[in-house]
Image (cartoon, rainbow, N blue to C red; front, side, top):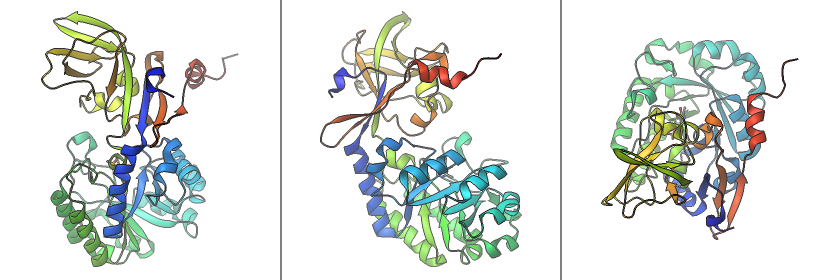
Length: 377
Ligand SMILES: Cc1ncc(COP(=O)(O)O)c(C=O)c1O
């Protein structure tokens, strides 16, 4: 299959780029002894799990269906975590997970009897410190509901707990800042950790970022694991899938109202939601910083402010031209929706040998099915 023949919009996952990230993950594991479980909330396109599986130890989840998917399609260790479990959820996932991590002591007390003897028991703790660019994504924000805070811990709970999970980073590219968080955790929770078998330090550590000092991170993790005599885990999502995937779109119109806007056959609100939620403009592969032709890359949704970015180009854009919206996998493909009845992007993988393989495609029936299956009668 030749990419020029593919109908836009579509996602194209590049296996070679994915492997580059996975090789760094492997290096981190080898140097530190840490185990890595893929955060399915970030990326769960299971069609490429066979590429990822040899490098990672399993998956972690944020809801019951992710637990099922991890167990069924990835294998290895399946960690089950949810901010709030119903009893039905706990019963359903207890049989298929290896570790069950509760978000609160009340959930742990209510449901531990359903898990004991089946899975290792864990509790999420909130370290009260974090590294996150935006308050919306800061697990230690004021009044945070994510994990038990140090002053609320009931020491009795630890008597029969196997492990704990902390998650306090979001796209942290600064290894020293991460090491400072590790030290804070050791100081605050060290005596509890010493009695456990495992500790997960969550996700958000951007160890695949160009120039990231993986050796320094590995040394700090190794020392932390040895100090508390625990098996350490990280739960990377974005670090695994970053810079691997383009959302390819076509310019369908060009309009002008003081600025030129190229309208493309996709929308951030439907196909790249975090652009909108976090107000973080996308990058376009064809753009050039010093280009003389400036365009808003506008969505074809009805939302007035729905745009991918403003970008400069060396040549004027043309209707029918394709654009590559870079880095469009993490927290993107898992959030697709049918707003405005737009065409859902297909999903392809470009294999190492150059072959392009179809992983998913959608049609009108898929749209209709998500809205109703039955009419009133
Ligand atoms: C508990 C937990 N683990 C792991 C992750 C994955 O984080 P990232 O994709 O930034 O590595 C998240 C992200 O929100 C999370 O909440």
